[in-house]
Image (tube, rainbow, N blue to C red; front, side, top):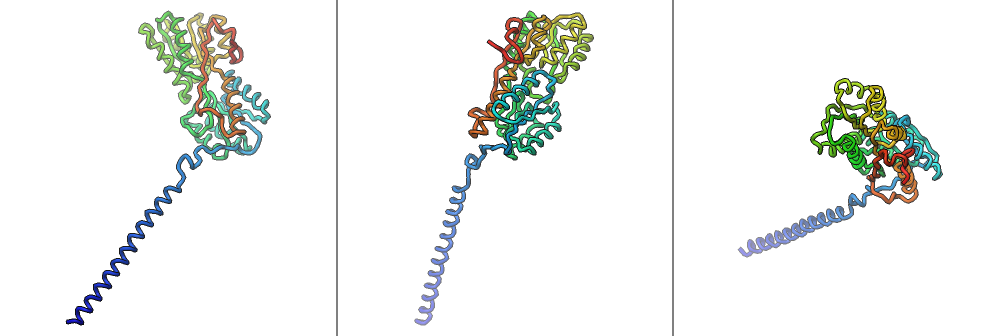
Length: 346
């Protein structure tokens, strides 16, 4: 009996020791695992520390690419010429080209900029959605893009998006239109390209003003894709369908030119407004064939983009927010003499 008790005691002692060893081993493992997880989390870089604000150094050359829509439009010629002159003044080699509002051609031009190891790209883009991938591709190659005149539907891809305050400008010139119409009458509207965000912004701003007047009635609204010839044809057709039209709102000055030509051919002179601030529109305002335009300061916008590109390449920052608005100026017969080459002189 004593032998049995002695064996039992020994077994209990062994069991207790084993339990203690297992308990210590299991608890220590969990604690170490927790510490490891905490350490891993602590050492993992946050989104801010991970380089989301990585400075792009450029492709390695001294070339600045300037990509715009067709320079047959005086507004785009002004921005291309101004950007080119400023870039050369700052010591850069310039390659200027037009994408003609063709996203595929624009992509090819971005590819050329990447192949040329461009220092930076200044671009008035060919589509708010279609341009995003091209800008991303340039960014991946270390080349910063500075967008002018038109925004894209993405942030954090381009370094700067410098555009005219289309909303403010369109509202300002719409007020002049309402005044010229005597706050009443039938009118028509010609819209720009549907793919261009500016077309929608300008139209919305026009109507935010005009729709407040119950005696003003829009009898037709069509797209003329920013083009003079298309605007002429559309205006001619709208006059035939609505001979009692008393005014016309145009999304840009190129369409305003086409509209005024169609009205002249029909022997009519009506209130007509546009947006851009071209010398051609200024001449029509002086002759009384157009009421006014909202000057987008293309030269100022283009020069600002080049200056910011130079500053960014040298200092790693533009010192400004990505999205920047440059106010427009309402141009009428009262101040049109101060406008020349998209530059307004006080």
